[in-house]
Image (cartoon, rainbow, N blue to C red; front, side, top):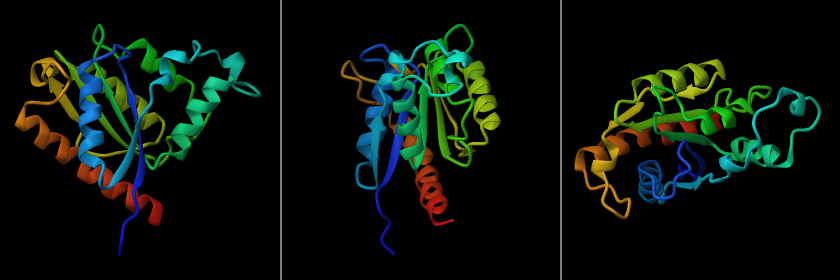
Amino acid sequence: MIKSKKKILALPGSTRNGSANEGILRTIAALSAGTADMHIYSGIRELPYFDPDQDKEEAPAVVATFRRAIEAADGIIICTPEYVFSLPGILKNALEWTVSTTLFQNKPVALIVAAASGEKALESLLLIMRTFSAKIIPETLLIRGASGKLDKNGKITDEKLLSEIKNLMAPLEEMMHTNKEA
């Protein structure tokens, strides 16, 4: 049976150009190119602050675009830093715009936190994704000291990290194929 390429939407928690998170996601996109089409969503910085009053009838156009991107994806990868022992506000804001939907329900999701510490951001992300009823792959990835594992061009130089990323992607891709067949 030939498996078709699946669509992965990558949500970076950092909006800084050249961030370690961006480098990690670009590496994943390159590693997955033969089996999946991955789009790194750069529009979370365009989302307005979450306001439930703006979400009652029709969400703002940029929010609708964001939601369509999630809906069209077969799987999601979230790669984020940790800011002050939590998720970056911009990522939390983006996720809050999906609260009134079921977009993440049963959607395969891989979680990566690349930070100096990262435990609290990972805890927060796991809680949010469980609340959304996402299908979280068990191989979450906590990358401590991520900046030191990438070169100045954002390419991963750490072989152990590359292996961990491959171990993260295999179950995500399998879950995406299984999810569509069900």
